[in-house]
Image (tube, rainbow, N blue to C red; front, side, top):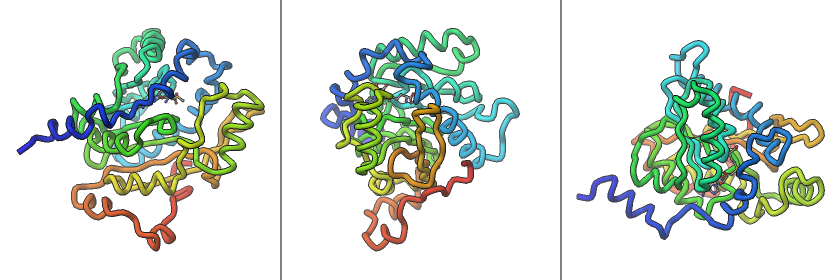
Length: 290
Ligand SMILES: C[S@@+](CC[C@H](N)C(=O)[O-])C[C@H]1O[C@@H](n2cnc3c(N)ncnc32)[C@H](O)[C@@H]1O
């Protein structure tokens, strides 16, 4: 009988890579700019004001046992597409043990250099330049939490990406995703206004075809063994440079899903019927943390 690792190797072989070289190349020129708070990545810096509490409070609500001042201690987080480590660092400061991965070596170099300024973080965070499928080839049920913030809109094969997340997460582990929805409004605000008119992010950063609605993402997650627990709309104000939670998920959104328990997997792997989908759209504002 094949063991889990060889099955994983077969599943995540090179023909199913999640890395789209064209997408990764977009981040090459700015690989040294991650920590410029006023620069191109300024919206990601300010997104920490809402995404870090969202992750922290969701995890705290799931466990009864936390250490004061270091609430995420003992939690192993995989930050997929970590870039320069903008999200890995605050999660490490909350006590988590973070592995940040990114296919672009120059991003990892920047992340390594920045965390070295803080000796405490140096111990808690490790970075690696690799793909998610490479992690899945070498580890099964290793992480308590996976974070993929502003990443899924850049991957080549989202289903393989989600299968890899499933494989490396421990049972009942949490997956946090932030991304852009695929609507006319996200095209106008996320691409025309943000990239072409206001230059909030560099022109060409996003390909609208790769955006995904929360309903579609939920369907994909649930057919791959996850249960979606919360979907919250997010709004960026370009004038104040700040993010806030909103009810609508038609532009940006944050999603929390959990890897189902063994007995739930078989039912949640069934495709969602149209009737079910009507009764059960993405669960906006179900999180107790925002
Ligand atoms: C918009 S940045 C987000 C960085 C970081 N997550 C943050 O929010 O600060 C997208 C990152 O995803 C990485 N990336 C692109 N394709 C990827 C893939 N297939 N798997 C993992 N990371 C990817 C890029 O290199 C880039 O660092």
